[in-house]
Image (cartoon, rainbow, N blue to C red; front, top):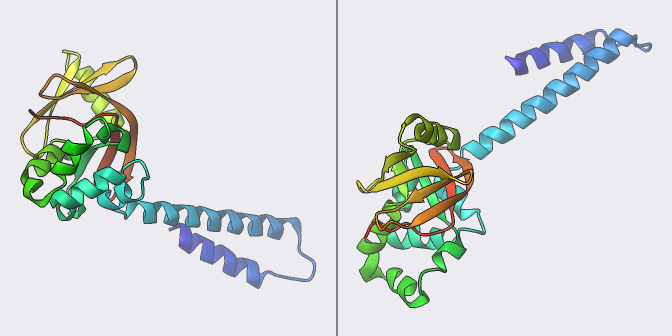
Length: 198
């Protein structure tokens, strides 16, 4: 609708163009210029939203280890699908908390199933924005909300010191450090540790 309006205004401005422009015509040209800028901004946002979650992770220099792990686990095709999904994405620093020998072992083809189990525990089916997650926690009445992961695991989400904290099945608390990195098929929230189901 806005593009149609812009074209109509542009056509009107061209028809009414004279050697001596009055103030009215100058105002209309200004309006056309503003409309064009708004259309460009909207298009840029749409292009960004068209990137799936795997592409968003791949563009983050904080998540190179996660990107490699998703590839090794064979989860790239799944997370490129329609979804939607919510991914709690450990940073490179989070993965560095795992002993290097253990991490290297997990990346081997023979450990694919184990790695897939760990990474699937970081994925929750559905779109859960930060606001929605906070609301779910607050509305639960218990101070926490149970999330069910893609491999039927359980994560307890709660709020501590004004931050969302996830408690995994081992009782370890992992902090959400950044939120709402949006892709075409869901959300990514950054976390400072690797969640473990067992």
